[in-house]
Image 1 (cartoon, rainbow, N blue to C red):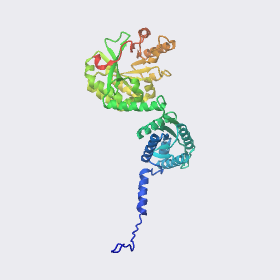
Image 2: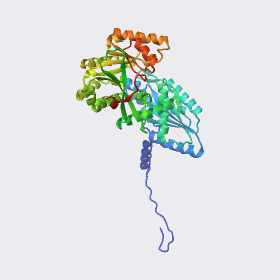
Image 3: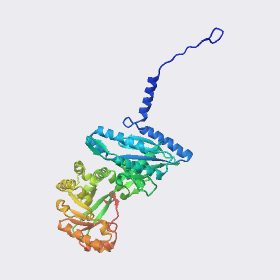
Image 4: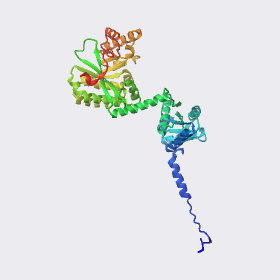
Length: 454
């Protein structure tokens, strides 16, 4: 306060208690960046720390390690003891991680039973040592609930944060793939994301292939081919038989062979979608031409995933009825391994297919040669002898004996026998002399676009 002349004669101070507002603000900030159950930083906070670590690695030439941790057998606790027990176990796990980690390291709960760990200024060997210590501590954790003791473990994936300047999502993906590699290797293990040739890198490549397969299905980038199966018995009655094959178009428009995408399709449960694409495209795009080519029969491959699909047969029956094709001209090829691993589902499908008039051929026969007994429960129209035996049949006496045995068993069961992967004239002449009914391979015909066979 001043006088009229400007002289200071006093002051007025106003005080207000903002403790409650400040506390509330701090609580909101904490809850936005921390997991309410364990008190650890949450995923958003962890990704902010990763961004800071990445910037330090680029600007200062530092190296850090990121770990992705997935608990093993946690679902067992949740399912048997309840979610309250699962929550208590997660709090115990968080405390173990706090004790193991160094003072400046960041431990976060990313969601569910997944945790993240950021090790500042740490190289790969030291990161592995700390991860192994963490695994030992988690394995030693005895969680007691309702007088019952539970033990868990974890799988850990490591990746390096270096000067390369990878994005946050790339780092998370690498660590996740490495963790998956550790889990598939037997759990309670540590896996490091390495360069080309490492198991984690191969798994990462498979994930990328699987994503490409999904895009190919959506973009209709598959093509149907067909390969002729030659009759050796003289009993074809003028019929020609083809196996329908699948090829994928890559991003550059080039043909991608099945060996490049089928393993990833099987691993990521995409084969059922692919099988339906083949069935739908065969009947809708080529059904009219197939129906008019009365001298022609054909085979479609079905995966183990499809055998387990209870809705496959209704879908297939609907497509077949719509096309006007005679079911007697359609065969389904099912691998022997798929049948042996899904015998009840395969028997149910076989019953429906044969009732409708379709044929069933066991593909790659001989790979499960340890037991012929299941063939009594699974009568088929044909046995396609696995190519690994046919390729060496002219030079390897054991392979020749196996092929002769399969041929004899097939004929005793009333099934035709087919030699696949016949790649030269000498092999073709031998399998014909052995009494095998049909042959397929490059020595007979190369696969060709389906539309060219009409």
